[in-house]
Image (cartoon, rainbow, N blue to C red):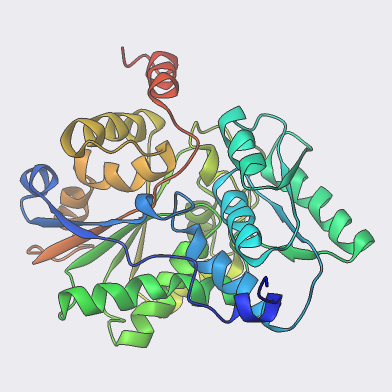
Length: 330
């Protein structure tokens, strides 16, 4: 007999403990040990399944049998669809009209209904909110909710278990700010509040950097970066708050640097990730970490650097070559 929704919700987490691998190639570039937290091997393809899995299980534990609805540029929707399938709950995912057909097929393969609405994430978000309000569905947020951040904090607990002592710095990409908020919560939980976080965005999707510079939330007029999964026009308020409580260094790289990082990472580590993830990798490959050290924003000697390889589903070898051609990278 099939188990009840409540029984399935009480099972283990939907994410897996991911490998922490030392990268010889990136360590050579950085001049210190670089460790890769490989969220790209999560069952839903990215770190998103940590927070969204926690959110979905919490709502299922409250015995709510309403369908899930999510709005996303891809990875959060896949995580929501994956968790809904595991829980036996229907899911509808609202995507911007330009969404990757590969992502659409993956969502449908997880059993979700896919609706296309609007040109960017924010417009898809409005449609998802309408559906949730009209039909009483559970609106699964992609990044801006305390349960999401609680789920992402598990990543830092795994780092603590694997390393024992804190790294010299932690590098991550920022889109809507959920990963930054969750990692910050995790650092506080394990007593690593002092670890610097290098928060990287691509130019044209730099809503967090704009907010940091302005000292308030800023809404970008448009997303022009090729890193579409960093494509929220306004960052979560909690991400900006984290800059007051933790040592967060906001940095922006060019699209070309992010895409070059994707190619180099593929060559170095035999793993293909999205340009959104390439933004974090570009902190090493482009020399950004060294510049931050030269500016005195990072310590002159870092015992180790952890890069969160956040993963991503919207990439293929063909799409990578197209991005390189678009940016004139050959």
